Length: 349
Image (cartoon, rainbow, N blue to C red; front, side, top):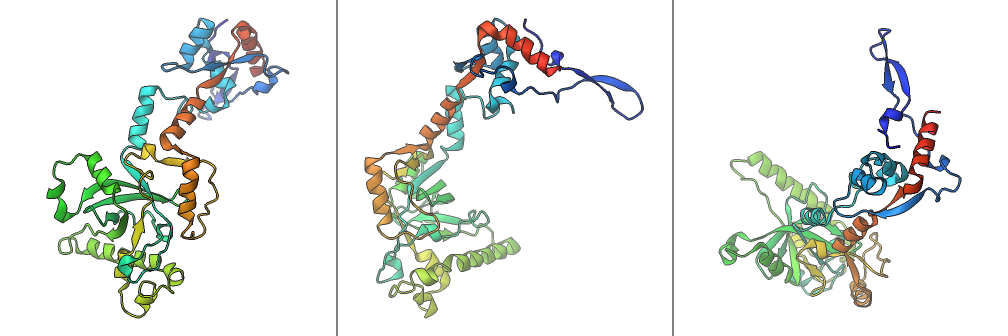
């Protein structure tokens, strides 16, 4: 017989204010381990695939002709015991909304982790994986295309996937008119078409009217430069006219050195205007180690593997995880009455 779930819980006398007056309260702390309900643990349940629009009470109505057995769904499925949030599959419409909110404001492209010896700092390719991208610096650090007069904020750099994730792609001050009335997606595609980028530090404060904030931001830039330059003291010290020796001998100031370095992209097939389509993982290629600086050939190996072993996108990953939530355990309709009786008998014992 269908029943209100909490009405079957035992009562307990409790002195709420310590004044000696006791009231009967429902003892919601009681719990029954589902493994105690039946020695053959698979005999009392079957599986149900959640459809768009389904709720625990509507599933109960469909299977048992009453919504009152909704509680059994939470009892049988560990993932639901803490509630429906993040455990119940999203409908197709809500899934697309989530993807839009979580991914579509970002773009991504793969950055080659290589150091290239060159005759001058302006020609040198650098390794983005060794650049500090702490949250305290990211509001002022921008990736700037060397070919398109566009720049972007940096969300993060994924050293495992070699991906820079960017957002808010906008023209440089002098190029605003050139990109007037361009759609956002057009700006994204133009920015991502570049083959190389440099880092910029942009101080958003006015040096006169916001003098203290401006000075603090400049100090933060110097702090970042000192951190960023450390790896290069050993990584490229031997590169003539381009290595750290150009700073040591006074040819370049530290700031010019760090913001003159170029970061090389992987090119076509490794840029994604919408981050939803970016690679979440590359199949059969999981040996990249974020603790090391990769040789020049590392990205070539990654590209070669990706051709034969396609990637799974962020969208596909989210879809797989959402679909995995659809299959749940439900009590077999033919034994729901016996299940209920046994459950509440144990609950009150």
